[in-house]
Amino acid sequence: MTAAGRDQLRPAGTIDVVVIGAGHVGLATSYCLSERSIEHVVLERGEVANSWRNERWDSLTLLTPNWQSRLPGFSYAGDDPDGFMDMPELIRFISDYAEFSSAPVQTNTEVTSVRQNDNGYQVSTEAGEWYCRSVVIASGACNVAVTPKVADTVPDNINTLTPHDYRGPGQLEPGGVLVVGASATGMQLADEIQRAGHDVTIAVGEHVRMPRTYRGRDIQFWLDAAGILNERYDEVDDIVRARRLPSPQLVGSHEPAMLDLNSLTDKGAKLVGRLMGVRDGVAQFSGSLRNVCSLADLKMHRMLDTMDEWATASPQASQFEPGERFERTRVDDAADLTLSLTDGAIRTIIWATGFRPDYSWLDVPVLDRKGRIRHDGGVAEAAGIYVVGLPVLRRRKSSFIHGTEDDVRDITEHLAGYLDQGVA
Ligand SMILES: Cc1cc2nc3c(=O)[nH]c(=O)nc-3n(C[C@H](O)[C@H](O)[C@H](O)COP(=O)(O)OP(=O)(O)OC[C@H]3O[C@@H](n4cnc5c(N)ncnc54)[C@H](O)[C@@H]3O)c2cc1C
Image 1: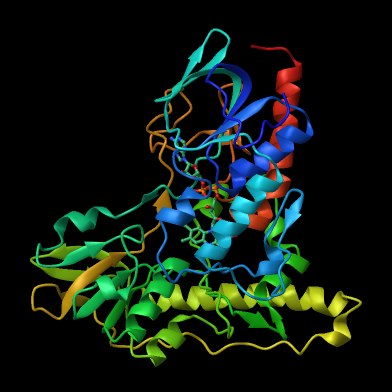
Image 2 (image 1 turned 45 degrees about the horizontal axis):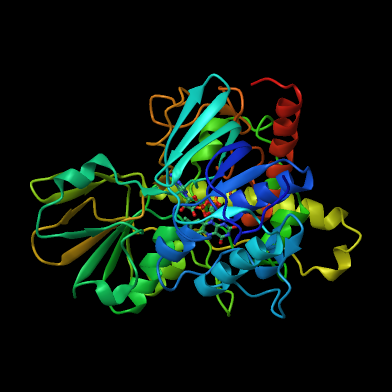
């Protein structure tokens, strides 16, 4: 069977491949399977682009520019290539892709379990059982907002939110806000909340600093051109660390601006170190703030060195503006090591401490102790099980929209070989 089309629902039954999830990664996988005439269905618990519809805050825009929104057979075709999609635009883009590719998506079909059987796998949903030889897990990398253990010791008078709960500053009580985490999410939320008139304190651990523009071009141009995000997973020195790296401190906006810790402190936000614990209602921060900021500055400048090398060697060298170096992150020598959570100054804590996938429905023994799928570049330890859409799955760009194509082409090639072997 080739792609059946979204509106032609078929009853559950036997099929070669079940793809779980109709985000852009599941849809791109479907596109590549259809190219190879591999029979498949895409099961989605909500609507197409469900995560972007229901698990993001209102003001979110992509941090990757429109020109970089490309998927197999499809790319951004609007008149603002240098702009950044907001959520309605992105949902339309992904929905258009599903239409364009006639992906055989069955919406409102939650997968409740995947089990091995004699012929392959049994995929259970409330709408029936699917029997297949291969399963591609495209259920997302960010299903659960992670909160640290210390969250359990926060006093009851404090409201706590994760990025999945947060919609906008209008939902916050008046008063101070502690944002824990300085990745793209933490920085964007801290910036928005500070602008809305709250006093913001941001707890800063390891982070990735990046200018929005460099030498007259968007930073994504340089990352793309210099091939920095093309590095393969099997060439990365420390893959475990690379997969845990926080997202870069970037925001997509109409007037490109650097979103770094200096820009936050310029607006009045206060920096503290990594949140280590809460004792007797007092938050305790690490004294490593200066070190983590120096390290992030150093790494940013190293990355800019790589971009400069590429620019100098490029035939277009004369078209680029000269390189520059940025002011180091300003850290107060007397940054607070403690903050009272009971004196009323802080009313809300936002845990911008990362996300993780949810595989609670996966009953195949491929999970490690932490509940992550054991895989080699997306090929799981159980034959016929694949996972796509995870950070640095096969390349540094894997978790970005533009990184999807290379990964899903590799995976569908492997999968086609597996089906050809006739192994059940
Ligand atoms: C806040 C945030 C901002 C980001 N910004 C950018 C950006 O600017 N640029 C960029 O390129 N990338 C960005 N990303 C990264 C990115 O694009 C994600 O990694 C992306 O969502 C992954 O796509 P996906 O299709 O794998 O997952 P998702 O979009 O999460 O899709 C997974 C789908 O699987 C479904 N599903 C899950 N479990 C089940 C089940 N049991 N049964 C059936 N269906 C199920 C979900 O409903 C969902 O629709 C961002 C991510 C986040 C969290």
